[in-house]
Length: 189
Image (cartoon, rainbow, N blue to C red):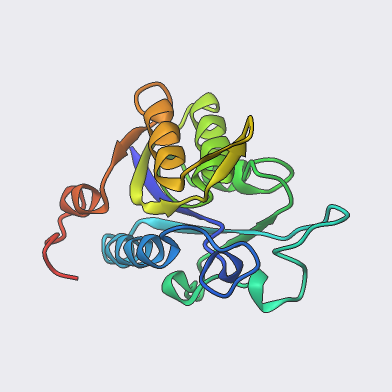
């Protein structure tokens, strides 16, 4: 089974000072960066996904703005593809599926932002397309949501979406667990 790390939308607008700051984005970005380094050392394929907003009225990830840039914690190295998308699903109208299948990749390690939107949608799509997925729970971040006049705190949103993905769509694990699987010392940071 050939593995790849899929880093979804870890972009500046989700971090403090950005146009759509998420709860825990610095910590999730740091965890994603640690996973990225281990995956590089293990020789895994690395794919970066960058959301560029094209819908009218969009307020973040605007084309040509620093907020749309990939965050420094997961900066791509030469040769690591960056696929741009315009929808929550990283497979929709992108070359991602062709790229993965062309390289014989059957398992994805997924990390990124927002858990309740692009991570959920991309992970479910990947599973539906036949990929085995492992989701790095602590390398993902989300935000508070509102429904029925009530605020649902980010921690509850995160927990609900990770619980919903666990089992049928992905194996939800910590970065430390994924690092250990890849032969890294989870204590070294």
